[in-house]
Image 1 (cartoon, rainbow, N blue to C red):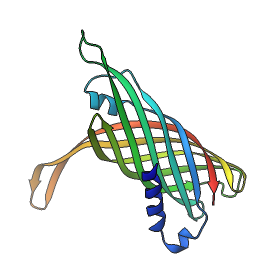
Image 2: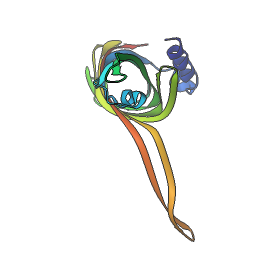
Image 3: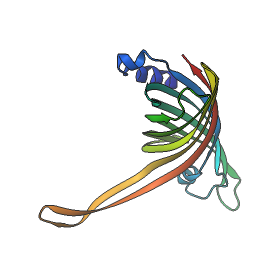
Length: 202
């Protein structure tokens, strides 16, 4: 988690002094992520594994009226068996999917013990297996609730959808003076994640 700590420190250092002086919420989270698109893309065949456990860290810095700056780092480590051929034993693949994102979170019911929220982030996805390492642009959206029975400790329940643009291509299909029609094609991978974590307020 050295990389995670470094990213969090760098992100906090880049905040304006007025925001950095406020309270900060840190939540280590864990859960399950569904969506096997990355696994099938790496192995180039169908894989009988929809998802795998995921862990991560969420950092929230309040701005005003329930609006937060949010940073998210998650890590998924999956191992799948893929048959090499009809007469050969299966090959064991280890695949890693990580998301590094930042954006905003809007909390509703500020000051209450149960605080629903919506969140939207963008950033990068890294997926890797057997020496192959790829980084792509990604966006996510989700929601959940913070349960805060005491001011500085609570529980965070989160659901999130990740959209990773694996391949994207745009091309002009017709042009006239001053106007062009552009066709855009994108190969995307979808993953849904459900996590829970402990919120600590500093």
